[in-house]
Image (cartoon, rainbow, N blue to C red; front, side, top):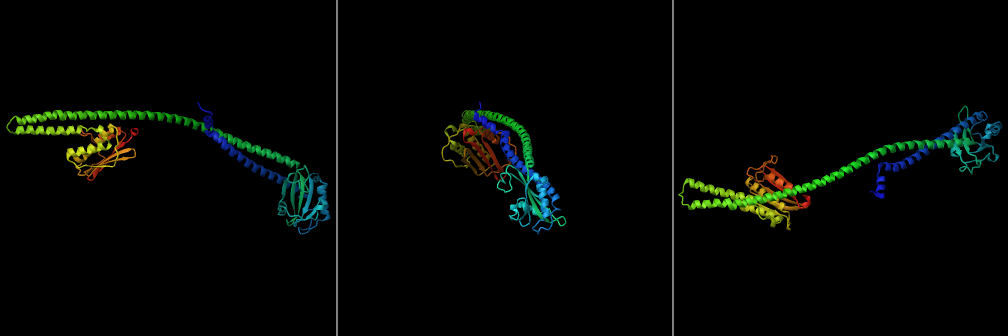
Length: 463
Protein backbone atom coordinates (compact mmCIF):
# COMPACT_ATOMS: atom_id res chain seq x y z
CA UNK A 1 0.00 0.00 0.00
CA UNK A 2 1.57 3.29 -1.14
CA UNK A 3 1.69 6.19 1.30
CA UNK A 4 0.62 9.69 0.33
CA UNK A 5 4.25 10.79 0.18
CA UNK A 6 5.13 7.94 -2.22
CA UNK A 7 2.08 8.74 -4.34
CA UNK A 8 3.06 12.43 -4.51
CA UNK A 9 6.65 11.53 -5.36
CA UNK A 10 5.49 9.14 -8.08
CA UNK A 11 3.13 11.80 -9.46
CA UNK A 12 5.82 14.49 -9.73
CA UNK A 13 8.36 11.97 -11.05
CA UNK A 14 6.23 11.52 -14.18
CA UNK A 15 7.78 13.15 -17.24
CA UNK A 16 4.41 14.51 -18.39
CA UNK A 17 3.84 16.25 -15.04
CA UNK A 18 7.37 17.65 -15.05
CA UNK A 19 6.82 18.88 -18.61
CA UNK A 20 3.45 20.36 -17.67
CA UNK A 21 5.02 22.35 -14.84
CA UNK A 22 8.32 23.41 -16.40
CA UNK A 23 7.04 23.60 -19.97
CA UNK A 24 3.94 25.48 -18.85
CA UNK A 25 6.05 28.11 -17.09
CA UNK A 26 8.36 28.45 -20.08
CA UNK A 27 5.45 28.73 -22.52
CA UNK A 28 3.65 31.31 -20.37
CA UNK A 29 6.78 33.45 -20.23
CA UNK A 30 7.30 32.97 -23.97
CA UNK A 31 3.65 33.77 -24.69
CA UNK A 32 3.88 36.93 -22.58
CA UNK A 33 7.04 38.10 -24.35
CA UNK A 34 5.73 37.25 -27.83
CA UNK A 35 2.29 38.71 -27.10
CA UNK A 36 3.81 41.91 -25.72
CA UNK A 37 6.11 42.26 -28.73
CA UNK A 38 3.37 41.53 -31.27
CA UNK A 39 0.84 43.80 -29.54
CA UNK A 40 3.34 46.64 -29.34
CA UNK A 41 4.23 46.28 -32.99
CA UNK A 42 0.61 46.19 -34.04
CA UNK A 43 -0.26 49.20 -31.90
CA UNK A 44 2.65 51.13 -33.36
CA UNK A 45 1.54 50.19 -36.85
CA UNK A 46 -2.08 51.17 -36.23
CA UNK A 47 -1.10 54.49 -34.66
CA UNK A 48 1.33 55.22 -37.49
CA UNK A 49 -1.30 54.40 -40.11
CA UNK A 50 -3.80 56.71 -38.43
CA UNK A 51 -1.18 59.42 -38.26
CA UNK A 52 -0.23 59.02 -41.91
CA UNK A 53 -3.85 59.12 -42.97
CA UNK A 54 -4.38 62.36 -41.03
CA UNK A 55 -1.13 63.77 -42.39
CA UNK A 56 -2.17 63.06 -45.99
CA UNK A 57 -5.35 65.01 -45.46
CA UNK A 58 -3.47 67.92 -43.90
CA UNK A 59 -0.91 67.91 -46.69
CA UNK A 60 -3.71 68.07 -49.25
CA UNK A 61 -4.84 71.37 -47.72
CA UNK A 62 -1.68 73.11 -46.61
CA UNK A 63 1.07 72.95 -49.25
CA UNK A 64 -0.64 75.41 -51.61
CA UNK A 65 -1.41 77.74 -48.76
CA UNK A 66 2.13 78.23 -47.41
CA UNK A 67 4.95 80.07 -49.05
CA UNK A 68 8.56 81.06 -48.47
CA UNK A 69 11.39 78.87 -47.25
CA UNK A 70 12.31 77.18 -43.98
CA UNK A 71 14.47 80.18 -43.10
CA UNK A 72 11.49 82.50 -43.06
CA UNK A 73 9.90 82.98 -39.67
CA UNK A 74 6.48 84.21 -40.70
CA UNK A 75 3.42 82.84 -42.43
CA UNK A 76 1.27 84.92 -44.68
CA UNK A 77 -2.14 86.06 -43.53
CA UNK A 78 -3.73 84.02 -46.29
CA UNK A 79 -1.96 80.89 -45.07
CA UNK A 80 -3.01 81.49 -41.47
CA UNK A 81 -6.57 82.06 -42.59
CA UNK A 82 -6.52 78.81 -44.55
CA UNK A 83 -5.20 76.89 -41.58
CA UNK A 84 -7.72 78.46 -39.26
CA UNK A 85 -10.56 77.50 -41.58
CA UNK A 86 -9.17 73.94 -42.02
CA UNK A 87 -8.81 73.26 -38.31
CA UNK A 88 -11.66 75.32 -36.85
CA UNK A 89 -14.40 75.39 -39.45
CA UNK A 90 -13.88 72.30 -41.63
CA UNK A 91 -14.42 68.65 -40.84
CA UNK A 92 -11.21 68.69 -38.77
CA UNK A 93 -12.80 71.03 -36.26
CA UNK A 94 -14.74 68.16 -34.73
CA UNK A 95 -11.62 66.06 -34.17
CA UNK A 96 -8.64 68.42 -33.82
CA UNK A 97 -8.24 69.84 -30.33
CA UNK A 98 -5.25 72.11 -30.94
CA UNK A 99 -2.50 72.70 -33.45
CA UNK A 100 0.95 74.36 -33.62
CA UNK A 101 3.16 75.35 -36.54
CA UNK A 102 6.89 74.99 -35.83
CA UNK A 103 9.94 76.32 -37.56
CA UNK A 104 13.34 74.69 -37.54
CA UNK A 105 14.54 76.74 -34.53
CA UNK A 106 11.89 75.28 -32.19
CA UNK A 107 9.66 78.40 -32.36
CA UNK A 108 5.89 78.15 -32.57
CA UNK A 109 5.04 80.34 -35.53
CA UNK A 110 1.32 80.00 -35.14
CA UNK A 111 -1.19 78.22 -32.88
CA UNK A 112 -4.87 78.23 -32.19
CA UNK A 113 -3.81 79.29 -28.70
CA UNK A 114 -2.55 82.83 -28.98
CA UNK A 115 -0.41 82.61 -25.82
CA UNK A 116 1.77 79.96 -27.50
CA UNK A 117 2.66 81.94 -30.62
CA UNK A 118 6.27 83.16 -30.67
CA UNK A 119 7.44 80.86 -27.88
CA UNK A 120 10.53 78.67 -28.15
CA UNK A 121 10.68 75.07 -26.92
CA UNK A 122 13.35 72.40 -27.00
CA UNK A 123 12.55 70.16 -29.99
CA UNK A 124 11.17 66.79 -28.99
CA UNK A 125 12.13 63.50 -30.63
CA UNK A 126 8.87 63.45 -32.59
CA UNK A 127 9.48 67.02 -33.83
CA UNK A 128 12.99 66.13 -34.95
CA UNK A 129 11.59 63.11 -36.79
CA UNK A 130 9.14 65.35 -38.62
CA UNK A 131 11.93 67.77 -39.58
CA UNK A 132 13.74 64.82 -41.15
CA UNK A 133 10.79 64.47 -43.53
CA UNK A 134 8.82 61.64 -41.86
CA UNK A 135 5.40 61.73 -40.28
CA UNK A 136 5.53 61.13 -36.50
CA UNK A 137 2.46 60.09 -34.54
CA UNK A 138 1.88 59.09 -30.90
CA UNK A 139 -1.16 57.90 -29.02
CA UNK A 140 -1.52 59.98 -25.89
CA UNK A 141 -3.34 58.54 -22.89
CA UNK A 142 -4.81 60.72 -20.21
CA UNK A 143 -2.42 59.53 -17.49
CA UNK A 144 0.65 60.26 -19.59
CA UNK A 145 -0.53 63.64 -20.88
CA UNK A 146 -2.34 64.96 -17.83
CA UNK A 147 0.29 67.65 -17.32
CA UNK A 148 0.34 68.65 -20.98
CA UNK A 149 -1.25 72.01 -21.64
CA UNK A 150 -3.12 70.66 -24.67
CA UNK A 151 -4.48 67.57 -22.89
CA UNK A 152 -8.22 67.33 -22.69
CA UNK A 153 -9.65 65.48 -19.77
CA UNK A 154 -11.30 62.15 -20.51
CA UNK A 155 -10.44 62.38 -24.21
CA UNK A 156 -7.78 60.14 -25.81
CA UNK A 157 -5.61 62.09 -28.21
CA UNK A 158 -3.54 61.22 -31.29
CA UNK A 159 -0.53 63.53 -31.56
CA UNK A 160 0.62 63.97 -35.18
CA UNK A 161 3.63 65.89 -36.59
CA UNK A 162 3.28 66.57 -40.31
CA UNK A 163 6.30 67.88 -42.30
CA UNK A 164 5.22 70.44 -44.94
CA UNK A 165 7.44 70.06 -48.00
CA UNK A 166 8.22 72.47 -50.81
CA UNK A 167 6.65 71.10 -53.94
CA UNK A 168 9.67 72.00 -56.05
CA UNK A 169 12.72 71.35 -53.83
CA UNK A 170 11.31 68.79 -51.38
CA UNK A 171 12.67 70.84 -48.48
CA UNK A 172 10.75 70.81 -45.19
CA UNK A 173 9.32 74.28 -44.79
CA UNK A 174 7.31 73.91 -41.59
CA UNK A 175 6.02 71.22 -39.26
CA UNK A 176 2.39 71.19 -38.30
CA UNK A 177 1.63 69.60 -34.94
CA UNK A 178 -1.95 68.85 -34.05
CA UNK A 179 -3.84 66.78 -31.47
CA UNK A 180 -6.74 64.76 -32.78
CA UNK A 181 -9.46 63.11 -30.75
CA UNK A 182 -8.88 59.34 -30.89
CA UNK A 183 -11.88 57.58 -29.40
CA UNK A 184 -12.21 55.40 -32.49
CA UNK A 185 -8.46 54.71 -32.45
CA UNK A 186 -8.71 53.69 -28.79
CA UNK A 187 -11.43 51.19 -29.66
CA UNK A 188 -9.33 49.83 -32.50
CA UNK A 189 -6.31 49.52 -30.22
CA UNK A 190 -8.31 47.75 -27.52
CA UNK A 191 -9.73 45.32 -30.08
CA UNK A 192 -6.26 44.81 -31.51
CA UNK A 193 -4.86 44.04 -28.07
CA UNK A 194 -7.66 41.56 -27.36
CA UNK A 195 -7.25 39.86 -30.73
CA UNK A 196 -3.48 39.73 -30.44
CA UNK A 197 -3.48 38.25 -26.94
CA UNK A 198 -6.28 35.85 -27.83
CA UNK A 199 -4.44 34.66 -30.93
CA UNK A 200 -1.12 34.35 -29.05
CA UNK A 201 -2.74 32.47 -26.15
CA UNK A 202 -4.58 30.20 -28.60
CA UNK A 203 -1.44 29.36 -30.57
CA UNK A 204 0.67 28.68 -27.49
CA UNK A 205 -2.18 26.83 -25.81
CA UNK A 206 -2.70 24.51 -28.79
CA UNK A 207 1.06 24.00 -29.17
CA UNK A 208 1.44 23.26 -25.47
CA UNK A 209 -1.51 20.86 -25.51
CA UNK A 210 -0.11 18.96 -28.51
CA UNK A 211 3.32 18.79 -26.93
CA UNK A 212 1.81 17.65 -23.64
CA UNK A 213 -0.09 14.88 -25.43
CA UNK A 214 3.11 13.70 -27.12
CA UNK A 215 5.14 13.89 -23.90
CA UNK A 216 2.36 12.24 -21.91
CA UNK A 217 2.21 9.34 -24.36
CA UNK A 218 5.98 9.00 -24.21
CA UNK A 219 5.89 9.28 -20.41
CA UNK A 220 3.32 6.51 -20.13
CA UNK A 221 5.40 4.33 -22.43
CA UNK A 222 8.52 5.04 -20.38
CA UNK A 223 6.67 4.34 -17.13
CA UNK A 224 5.38 1.08 -18.56
CA UNK A 225 8.86 0.09 -19.70
CA UNK A 226 10.26 1.16 -16.33
CA UNK A 227 7.79 -1.07 -14.52
CA UNK A 228 8.70 -3.94 -16.84
CA UNK A 229 12.40 -3.32 -16.21
CA UNK A 230 11.84 -3.18 -12.46
CA UNK A 231 9.91 -6.44 -12.65
CA UNK A 232 12.66 -8.00 -14.75
CA UNK A 233 15.27 -6.62 -12.38
CA UNK A 234 13.49 -8.10 -9.38
CA UNK A 235 13.17 -11.40 -11.22
CA UNK A 236 16.85 -11.25 -12.20
CA UNK A 237 17.82 -10.56 -8.61
CA UNK A 238 15.68 -13.44 -7.44
CA UNK A 239 17.23 -15.75 -10.03
CA UNK A 240 20.68 -14.43 -9.17
CA UNK A 241 20.11 -15.11 -5.49
CA UNK A 242 18.76 -18.56 -6.34
CA UNK A 243 21.71 -19.26 -8.63
CA UNK A 244 24.12 -18.00 -5.99
CA UNK A 245 22.55 -20.25 -3.39
CA UNK A 246 22.65 -23.14 -5.87
CA UNK A 247 26.26 -22.39 -6.74
CA UNK A 248 27.21 -22.34 -3.09
CA UNK A 249 25.33 -25.58 -2.57
CA UNK A 250 27.11 -27.19 -5.52
CA UNK A 251 30.44 -25.78 -4.35
CA UNK A 252 29.95 -27.18 -0.86
CA UNK A 253 28.86 -30.52 -2.33
CA UNK A 254 31.97 -30.54 -4.53
CA UNK A 255 34.12 -29.69 -1.53
CA UNK A 256 32.56 -32.51 0.50
CA UNK A 257 33.04 -34.87 -2.43
CA UNK A 258 36.66 -33.80 -2.76
CA UNK A 259 37.27 -34.26 0.94
CA UNK A 260 35.68 -37.70 0.85
CA UNK A 261 37.73 -38.62 -2.22
CA UNK A 262 40.89 -37.49 -0.46
CA UNK A 263 40.02 -39.56 2.58
CA UNK A 264 39.28 -42.55 0.35
CA UNK A 265 42.61 -42.17 -1.46
CA UNK A 266 44.37 -41.74 1.87
CA UNK A 267 42.80 -44.97 3.13
CA UNK A 268 43.75 -46.76 -0.09
CA UNK A 269 47.31 -45.48 0.27
CA UNK A 270 47.47 -46.67 3.85
CA UNK A 271 46.05 -50.05 2.85
CA UNK A 272 48.62 -50.39 0.09
CA UNK A 273 51.42 -49.39 2.43
CA UNK A 274 50.28 -51.47 5.39
CA UNK A 275 48.83 -54.40 3.43
CA UNK A 276 50.16 -55.23 -0.01
CA UNK A 277 53.56 -53.61 0.58
CA UNK A 278 53.99 -55.56 3.84
CA UNK A 279 53.10 -58.85 2.14
CA UNK A 280 55.58 -58.16 -0.66
CA UNK A 281 58.24 -57.27 1.89
CA UNK A 282 57.51 -60.51 3.78
CA UNK A 283 57.69 -62.53 0.57
CA UNK A 284 61.07 -61.01 -0.23
CA UNK A 285 62.40 -61.86 3.24
CA UNK A 286 61.09 -65.45 3.06
CA UNK A 287 62.67 -65.81 -0.38
CA UNK A 288 66.03 -64.78 1.03
CA UNK A 289 65.71 -67.08 4.07
CA UNK A 290 64.62 -70.06 2.02
CA UNK A 291 68.21 -70.82 1.16
CA UNK A 292 67.60 -70.99 -2.56
CA UNK A 293 70.82 -70.97 -4.49
CA UNK A 294 71.47 -67.75 -6.38
CA UNK A 295 70.16 -67.96 -9.89
CA UNK A 296 69.07 -65.72 -12.66
CA UNK A 297 65.41 -66.44 -12.02
CA UNK A 298 65.67 -65.85 -8.30
CA UNK A 299 67.42 -62.55 -8.82
CA UNK A 300 64.70 -61.49 -11.21
CA UNK A 301 62.03 -62.34 -8.65
CA UNK A 302 63.82 -60.39 -5.90
CA UNK A 303 64.31 -57.39 -8.18
CA UNK A 304 60.64 -57.44 -9.20
CA UNK A 305 59.57 -57.55 -5.56
CA UNK A 306 61.78 -54.55 -4.70
CA UNK A 307 60.46 -52.56 -7.67
CA UNK A 308 56.88 -53.40 -6.72
CA UNK A 309 57.45 -52.23 -3.15
CA UNK A 310 59.03 -48.95 -4.35
CA UNK A 311 56.09 -48.25 -6.68
CA UNK A 312 53.58 -49.09 -3.97
CA UNK A 313 55.32 -46.76 -1.53
CA UNK A 314 55.36 -44.00 -4.16
CA UNK A 315 51.68 -44.52 -4.90
CA UNK A 316 50.79 -44.57 -1.23
CA UNK A 317 52.74 -41.37 -0.63
CA UNK A 318 50.89 -39.68 -3.50
CA UNK A 319 47.50 -40.82 -2.27
CA UNK A 320 47.99 -40.16 1.40
CA UNK A 321 47.66 -36.77 3.11
CA UNK A 322 49.20 -35.49 6.32
CA UNK A 323 46.93 -34.48 9.17
CA UNK A 324 45.82 -31.16 7.68
CA UNK A 325 43.08 -30.58 10.26
CA UNK A 326 45.63 -29.42 12.80
CA UNK A 327 47.54 -27.15 10.38
CA UNK A 328 46.83 -23.51 9.58
CA UNK A 329 47.28 -21.75 6.22
CA UNK A 330 51.04 -21.42 6.55
CA UNK A 331 51.42 -24.99 7.81
CA UNK A 332 49.60 -26.55 4.82
CA UNK A 333 51.91 -24.94 2.26
CA UNK A 334 55.00 -25.55 4.37
CA UNK A 335 54.04 -29.23 4.85
CA UNK A 336 53.67 -29.73 1.09
CA UNK A 337 57.13 -28.21 0.44
CA UNK A 338 58.78 -30.23 3.20
CA UNK A 339 57.13 -33.50 2.10
CA UNK A 340 58.34 -33.00 -1.46
CA UNK A 341 61.90 -32.13 -0.42
CA UNK A 342 62.02 -35.15 1.93
CA UNK A 343 60.64 -37.63 -0.58
CA UNK A 344 62.54 -36.51 -3.67
CA UNK A 345 65.65 -34.92 -2.19
CA UNK A 346 64.71 -31.59 -3.77
CA UNK A 347 65.54 -28.07 -2.55
CA UNK A 348 62.29 -26.14 -3.11
CA UNK A 349 62.22 -22.85 -1.16
CA UNK A 350 59.22 -21.33 0.59
CA UNK A 351 58.86 -17.54 0.79
CA UNK A 352 56.13 -16.90 3.32
CA UNK A 353 54.90 -13.32 3.54
CA UNK A 354 52.18 -14.05 6.11
CA UNK A 355 53.07 -13.70 9.77
CA UNK A 356 49.96 -14.45 11.78
CA UNK A 357 48.35 -17.86 11.93
CA UNK A 358 45.29 -18.02 9.73
CA UNK A 359 42.83 -20.87 9.85
CA UNK A 360 40.83 -21.82 6.75
CA UNK A 361 38.33 -24.51 5.80
CA UNK A 362 39.48 -28.12 5.41
CA UNK A 363 38.59 -28.10 1.69
CA UNK A 364 40.88 -25.11 1.11
CA UNK A 365 43.65 -26.78 3.09
CA UNK A 366 43.43 -29.80 0.80
CA UNK A 367 43.37 -27.55 -2.27
CA UNK A 368 46.45 -25.60 -1.16
CA UNK A 369 48.34 -28.76 -0.23
CA UNK A 370 47.53 -30.57 -3.47
CA UNK A 371 48.27 -27.49 -5.58
CA UNK A 372 51.66 -26.99 -3.96
CA UNK A 373 52.43 -30.72 -4.04
CA UNK A 374 51.47 -31.17 -7.70
CA UNK A 375 53.11 -27.92 -8.91
CA UNK A 376 56.44 -28.73 -7.21
CA UNK A 377 56.27 -32.32 -8.46
CA UNK A 378 55.67 -31.18 -12.04
CA UNK A 379 58.55 -28.70 -11.84
CA UNK A 380 60.90 -31.34 -10.46
CA UNK A 381 59.88 -34.45 -12.43
CA UNK A 382 58.69 -33.06 -15.79
CA UNK A 383 60.33 -29.63 -16.15
CA UNK A 384 63.66 -30.82 -14.61
CA UNK A 385 63.95 -27.51 -12.73
CA UNK A 386 66.97 -26.85 -10.52
CA UNK A 387 65.39 -23.88 -8.72
CA UNK A 388 61.83 -24.01 -7.37
CA UNK A 389 60.32 -21.18 -5.35
CA UNK A 390 56.97 -21.21 -3.54
CA UNK A 391 55.55 -17.82 -2.47
CA UNK A 392 52.59 -17.47 -0.08
CA UNK A 393 50.92 -14.12 0.48
CA UNK A 394 47.57 -12.57 1.47
CA UNK A 395 46.27 -9.89 -0.92
CA UNK A 396 43.27 -8.12 0.58
CA UNK A 397 40.67 -10.91 0.88
CA UNK A 398 42.50 -13.40 -1.34
CA UNK A 399 45.05 -16.15 -0.72
CA UNK A 400 47.80 -16.29 -3.34
CA UNK A 401 50.22 -19.19 -3.77
CA UNK A 402 52.77 -18.95 -6.59
CA UNK A 403 55.10 -21.75 -7.66
CA UNK A 404 57.85 -20.68 -10.08
CA UNK A 405 60.74 -22.66 -11.55
CA UNK A 406 63.57 -22.37 -14.07
CA UNK A 407 62.65 -25.55 -15.90
CA UNK A 408 62.21 -26.18 -19.59
CA UNK A 409 58.68 -24.69 -19.67
CA UNK A 410 55.95 -25.52 -22.15
CA UNK A 411 53.47 -23.97 -24.57
CA UNK A 412 50.42 -22.78 -22.59
CA UNK A 413 48.28 -22.99 -25.74
CA UNK A 414 48.61 -26.79 -25.76
CA UNK A 415 45.26 -28.36 -24.72
CA UNK A 416 45.23 -29.92 -21.27
CA UNK A 417 44.81 -33.68 -21.05
CA UNK A 418 44.15 -36.08 -18.22
CA UNK A 419 47.39 -37.71 -17.14
CA UNK A 420 47.80 -41.39 -17.84
CA UNK A 421 49.46 -42.07 -14.48
CA UNK A 422 46.28 -41.09 -12.65
CA UNK A 423 47.74 -37.87 -11.23
CA UNK A 424 45.55 -34.77 -10.95
CA UNK A 425 47.62 -32.63 -13.31
CA UNK A 426 46.74 -29.07 -14.29
CA UNK A 427 43.07 -29.76 -15.22
CA UNK A 428 42.43 -31.30 -11.80
CA UNK A 429 44.06 -28.39 -10.00
CA UNK A 430 42.06 -25.84 -12.00
CA UNK A 431 38.77 -27.67 -11.37
CA UNK A 432 39.53 -27.97 -7.67
CA UNK A 433 40.20 -24.22 -7.44
CA UNK A 434 36.98 -23.41 -9.34
CA UNK A 435 34.83 -25.36 -6.88
CA UNK A 436 36.14 -23.06 -4.14
CA UNK A 437 35.54 -19.84 -6.10
CA UNK A 438 39.19 -19.50 -6.97
CA UNK A 439 41.25 -19.41 -10.13
CA UNK A 440 44.50 -20.87 -11.36
CA UNK A 441 46.67 -19.09 -13.94
CA UNK A 442 49.76 -20.36 -15.76
CA UNK A 443 52.57 -18.37 -17.39
CA UNK A 444 55.22 -20.38 -19.14
CA UNK A 445 57.65 -20.15 -22.04
CA UNK A 446 59.76 -22.98 -23.45
CA UNK A 447 63.37 -22.98 -22.18
CA UNK A 448 62.63 -20.11 -19.76
CA UNK A 449 60.48 -21.50 -16.97
CA UNK A 450 56.99 -21.68 -15.55
CA UNK A 451 54.96 -19.77 -13.00
CA UNK A 452 51.69 -21.23 -11.69
CA UNK A 453 49.50 -19.10 -9.42
CA UNK A 454 46.55 -20.19 -7.29
CA UNK A 455 44.13 -17.52 -6.08
CA UNK A 456 41.50 -18.50 -3.50
CA UNK A 457 38.95 -16.32 -1.70
CA UNK A 458 39.82 -15.84 1.93
CA UNK A 459 36.25 -15.61 3.22
CA UNK A 460 33.54 -18.19 2.64
CA UNK A 461 31.11 -15.53 1.29
CA UNK A 462 33.33 -14.97 -1.76
CA UNK A 463 33.13 -18.58 -2.90
